Image (tube, rainbow over the protein chains, first blue to last red):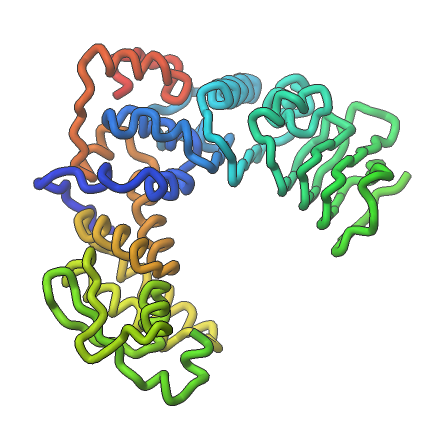
Length: 222
Length: 173
């Protein structure tokens, strides 16, 4: 790929309106987006109001950003790093609305050992943390959980319209089949793909008026 | 687009546009329809022989945009896998531009409402930023570091969590 030369006449990119720069930043992983704060005054607080956040565990481990993680970094250390990053991000980010929030945890098995962290990170699905996440993301309409070990047993969100639970399972430490209660009065689309048996999903009564396109694959029984 | 290509009479018509620096360009109506602004102008019968003036788009980026729209309009419907791949290759080659042109395309595509091109330019910009340090990005885009040393220190301290926790703040930026 040919590398563009720096513009001698000045910095055109920084003169773009916030909304265009936000569109660009929305395509960056969260960590890289935050790092734009160090570019210049124009960029200093721009990331705080970007409407999309994409937190990728892989990015936090990768060497692409500024430096490599310490060699031999353990999963636990990685998890702590992720938790630390996400917590800081939540405190410092102050967009009036959020269009998209993506949390990608490829090595999800580590979640099982850190239930508190999970709640902190995606508190949206934990009733206890719900008020907290509501103030942060008060209008969430779509949620997609892929490849997760679910340490919680309730999803409650008043604004949620679409929910995808794909290849998730309950905590393996529990002997009893786990039930997941979904309370989402505005839900119109639910897609379940559960690959592990012994995991049940019950939909709270007030939510179900037969969602228009309810899809269920490979059910869960016990 | 579909409407334009369905209507045989209109699809052959050429639409003239005039850049901010007075250069004239022509493109098929189906191509012009890829721009929201041009489409509205055409619908409102503002497309005449004198050409539609585009006050904020200079000749250089406009030539590129005409190229882009013409190519995409010609391949707008019923693409075979090969054609879709060819269009992808065209896009990849098309957006291999320097940062000046990239900036011009970002602004022009946004102004003219050419969605596909907007996405392409935004993605290219993000790809250029990805995986680089702030210093490398300053270099790529000619961004001047206008922080005072005190400010720089403050920012590094404030956002240390997004850089490397173990790294000394003075080396972050």
